[in-house]
Length: 115
Image 1: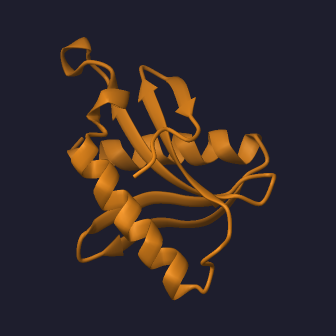
Image 2 (image 1 turned 90 degrees about the vertical axis):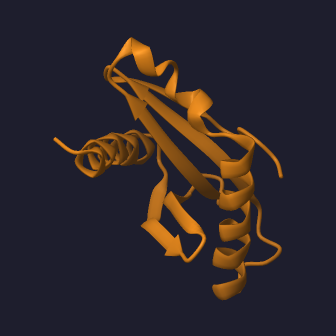
């Protein structure tokens, strides 16, 4: 299984997790020339949530949550601004979450970072 296929499996698990908690999935794999946001969702309270999903299957990779570097955070924040601007959502509440998946265990960190 290649990296793309493994990533899709992790994203599918994250989507299921979010749906089970009352989120609505707006889009997956939102792409710009600068990168990609894995999941854009609406939280039960109406907040727009930009979700980065990281997964790992071996201990040599470490905790997948630590793979969301400050540079990656800035990139996602820039793409989130573009997403909101393009859809005329400026002014709506939003946040950046990270979901880490390690050996089937899901860790969800709401408001993981601010840029």
